[in-house]
Length: 111
View (cartoon, one colour):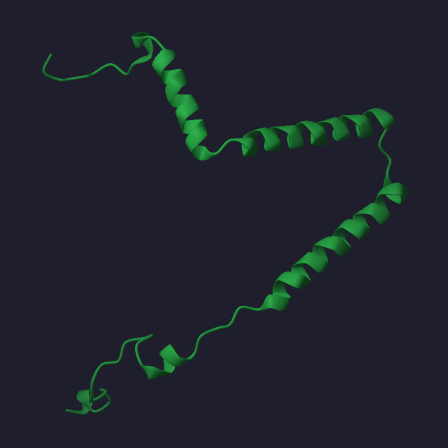
């Protein structure tokens, strides 16, 4: 009987079930989003301050990076201009125009 002396006697309790866990709920921290925005703004300011001092790029490299950023912004705006539903409709129209050559052939072991 000594093996069973340390066993817990009573009802089983489940984690997360009970009056203690139901009463406590975490509140959203509104100041957290403000802190993140301030941190992002401060990082941008720091990067702007560092660029002139540490900028060892050639004018061609600077122009290349500016054009890359511009093209990336254009791509983002182009993708954001259509909703998912519109993209699906356009894709379905495109698939309708394709010939049957592009269909997936049926494969069967019996034939």
